[in-house]
Image (cartoon, rainbow, N blue to C red; front, side, top):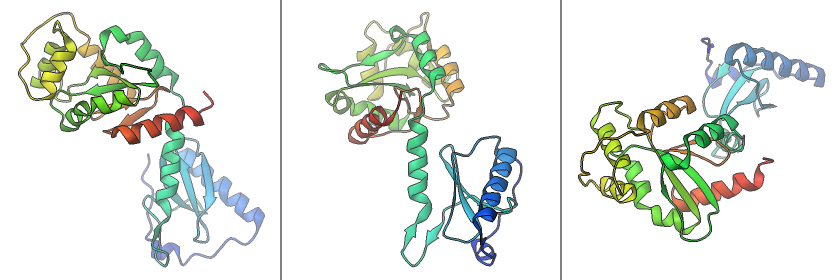
Length: 257
């Protein structure tokens, strides 16, 4: 992204308002052209903000504010101080949900190619309502938090399939632990032990850890846990069971795919 000039809100407030529908249409086209030039992406929404001449622009899950001439942009939150409301927060939440509902077939295909046989799976005893694939690091604190709540996920019908993603890289301590877990005779028992800080017997075998790390990088994983949802979208970070089931249900019910 090229460097864009950023103006303070107080400066923007001094700009005159657009007065006609034609001029507003021209403003939107000008802003759209600038977004495409600078971000190399198509905006999903361009609407007027409460500030004359300033347009709220949604690109993916991000929210920007472009002045009508396309020259100035604000990358930050817009507040209504009289109402005490963050006007950007709701737009960002809607944008993030819209992005999460967008199917990513390339990630679905990659997971299918990897195969569940190469993952460590914790499945519900009853009906499986949703399946998520989780990139995990043995030593990651929030990965351990997620794992310690596995019974809650499974109780809600969520099947969790683990993929290895030791953040410290190949041949690190976390990498060797992951290999030992994947090479264990009882992988689930070894994962339970490792996630609780126990020492897993060091083992080596033909394992998918490197391949799973490479696949994670291609998907855009830059931290753990990282959840790949059923539509292929990546959800970064830990989510408690109640929040996750609501998200999964919402995506399933709101997606055309």
